[in-house]
Length: 549
Image (cartoon, rainbow, N blue to C red; front, top):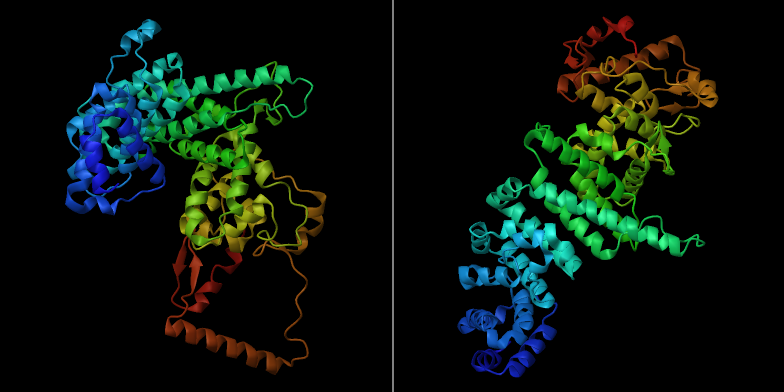
């Protein structure tokens, strides 16, 4: 917008002229994020001031939606926003969004609810999302208002708002921004049980989508393509934004377990509804992945104590596709499918942690629940049949995970190793059987288990073997985890003198490397950790003691 247009906008009293100017600005700048031309001659301040003056003028109410659209576009630009904004303008936006109106009476009597104009309220919410994200001043103003209370109350009565889904998308986005950036707002939400109200709203969304899917199924009862459970795009966006906001509210320091009965009920309910939402369908594969990604991120912040609720007991009329020990394992199947997808799109080292860390963290927690561990073990580490290839070769989940045991991204490597180790009931011999000692050595060394052993928290059980595995077990090389053809004898055709000569060459080369500090000989100590030795011959001392348990 040039200086002439800004002057016309400032001086005009005609709503028609103002509308035409703003409509052109919005159309021309819908995808613009920077306005360097406004830095000249205080044009930025003049434009913002003019827009807010019109916004506060009741005689120009027909232009308010366009004023807010223009402000929404301008607020994308962080440049000089702190010097442009003032407290009064932020409160004006909160008022236009409907969050300053007292809504408590509407909880008892919906007829008392004052519903703001849809376009004005939604545009005001978009502006608030932008300015609270970009401006510290705006965030400080929010701390001193009742915006947190307004957002919570509107969430409770949103079913009485005609355009609740459009509004809730931006309510949840604003809650996420405020709770992520302002500790005092986060404390206010916790004090007013904001998390519990959000969980209740999440449950309502699921129930409504379930009812809608049931209605569709009854209409298209003869159609094989009728969806089992469908989530609309609007509901999906709300769930994703709500999940981000809930993450900020429920995450506990040092992964401490909740202590009060109220908190325990809250987390149990949350995990239960998240497990159900994991199984719903959306309009596209990319939307499915977006939904799963947000739910998985939220699950990472929840203590393992509540993960049993992911796989609830099956009712009399329920017939899920995946049943194990009387529980519905559909959510675990979805999580494994999501892991498989993340593994296929995470080839590059730079995004390996970002893509895999959340889902591996969640599966590690699932593996700590006995019935879920048993199901995951069958899915990830099925009984071995073909042992002719190394564990890291192939396209099964086990193969993908074994490849990551040697990745240079240590955080991902440790999560994968811990997951597989827990599935093996923390038993060294079982871990070596499924991954090969070479792949598992790093994790075993860090746990002090190079000499063998097992976790103490698991019941003893045998690892049943297939006939194919037993047939080739004698030829297995535990280091690589597969069978290898008999190697050619390197000493064939040599005399004893030639063999002795080659052996001494090898000793001398090894001695040079030790002397130069290239390698340092070590052995496994009593604690299972590697211990340096002073001389190579010390390695022979405990040679008869070494066993693999």
